[in-house]
Length: 421
Ligand code: EPZ
Image (tube, rainbow, N blue to C red):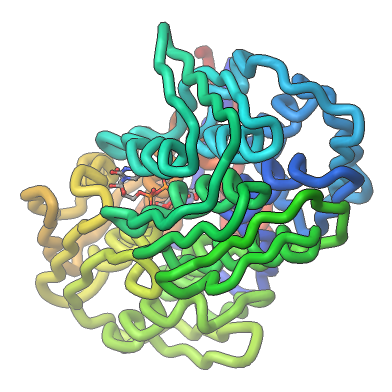
């Protein structure tokens, strides 16, 4: 048996929703914690299946993981062992590759099976491996396993061909104990990188420049445990702000950092969405006619590729022709086929799509092909006429903490049923 999510569309949403801790920070903070010689307490941990997968991997490494309260994790690597990581949990999420940088940094050796995650088109890790090799590691790939090994790790200058989030974080974790200074140029600037660096510096690392395109890491000999609170999830926040623009009468999205959402907020203002932005929340009122817009996804602080699918659903309700151009994942348009089944009129010509609006959407059976596609279908279900059934909802549960529960509290008619696998 497996879950499907069902939504009866047409209900106007009202109320306040509180955003959880950032998934894309959490999935890096947990592996980074093993670099400490003592317990690391992390609060604001979202209740998502990626965290469960990472905790399973930590237990494989004999790291003690204690869940305290609903969003506290205490991670104690005091007695950990550097075993080969071949547990199936490793293939459940792409971010398990962060154990490469963490274990290489800590032990100068790691053997791990290839990680998995959402299919968004090719997702190589060449930039990660190039960084590890620059630090002095040898890289072997045999029968689905990577083996990285280094006699010693020596700081050096690394230029990233693309401002990759994963490569930036992975390389800086491998460099924290390296001899001398490592400089990462053309580093990614996402807020999640700043959060990981905040944790590592609390542990005693010497990292400067996070949030800019040049990050320097001066190697140290030991890192200690610490306490850390995760930043709010800007992608969950953006998803709920888009949900409000599509389906709310009056909605408040709280526990956000507006600076992390500037690109999205300016695009929604262009659409003439009725919203007030305050220091840690946004209030959105429905009822206005939305204008068509053109968007292009870019590395931070540009418009996040993870908000492209949810925003595409909103654009089906705007008056006129909107265009989307994907510069991060050129093939990230699978949600358009599913939205088309619901009545959307979208012409996809990768890496772009033209969305004709406004179009009436109808509740039908659709499939979540990845995490953010799932979110875009939930939004479509909220505004569609009739009942939408969303299959493969495990994608949604990987990255959104209690999405349907939060929507139910806002007045949505949304529930889960079990169907045959
Ligand atoms: C992170 O993935 C996020 N995941 C993604 O969110 C997000 O879409 C992406 O950053 C871009 O913002 C996590 O943080 C766990 P990249 P990541 O390395 O690190 C190419 C979600 O929905 N590339 O910045 O894998 C790559 O193919 C997920 O929450 C290389 O060519 O993204 C892609 O085209 C989906 N070689 C582009 O760079 C490399 O070695 C962006 O990748 C690495 C990346």
